[in-house]
Image (cartoon, rainbow, N blue to C red; front, top):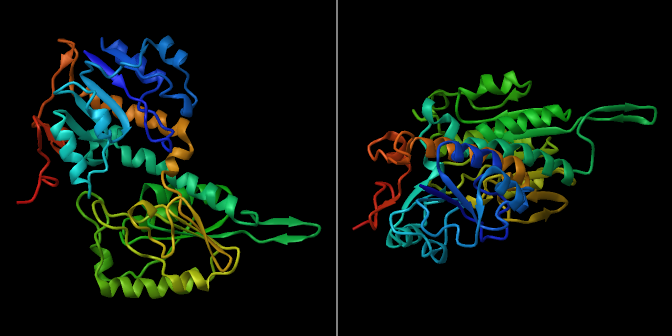
Length: 375
């Protein structure tokens, strides 16, 4: 059996799908590993590092591979090089990309979307959304500190006192919690909000203050899978009124709210942005899905009367060595469940919960119920 590590053709994607550490683990299972030249260079990993771990570096790495692993969904030109029936495992971004999924089906590969991994106990080690969001939350604070013209911690000097920065985190998932923790480490005064009641205790455990309209709808605002539900227009209006007043007093606002398969909810209006002091900063982690902040632009820092709106996509990719290391472990853990160690061959259990949740295409068709073509 052979696994191929494909090089990302998107010049803006610095991550890689395997590290020398996971190559060694694949080799220990009896799996041959090949990698395209230069695949890990942007994550600080040389071809020689992979060779030392047991991988073969080759421009034809994907040829005849039973499994091809990537960071991003392969383009049609890439998928055309894969053998029919190969498993292709990546972050597939399937929502709204039906044509791309059909192209993968037409290529005859079995495509798996790592971001659709169910949030169950046995899949925690495979949870790509969490591993990458954790780093995105950290990086959001670093980006805000770079854009903010003042220090984060309170500093008492002979020349006077520098007040602590006030940071407001909107959306307390994995990214939000890491943003809170990082901002606190840097010495900021942190507040946070989320529609899920369970997050209040988490926020307070990190030393931040929780802000929310705590009515009956708020108490039932979480799905069984742990995701935030979309709130009613009435609740959104009440929450907006509360946060609008709070945002006026903040130095930095970090927004992280995303609902899978839907446009990002607008949390910060243009009026709220204008109410902030010049020199304030907003960082929008949902800009790839339309953004939480009105006026956010993908891969730009917008300036609205002196208030900066940071809209970088792929924030996890700004710490590529760490992001690749975690993503590679996510992939290894998943692939281990698809492999028969005794027979040293693929053994995909198509009725397994992990497979049913992540498999997009098989035998020339889109098989995932959420993405099948509508009649």
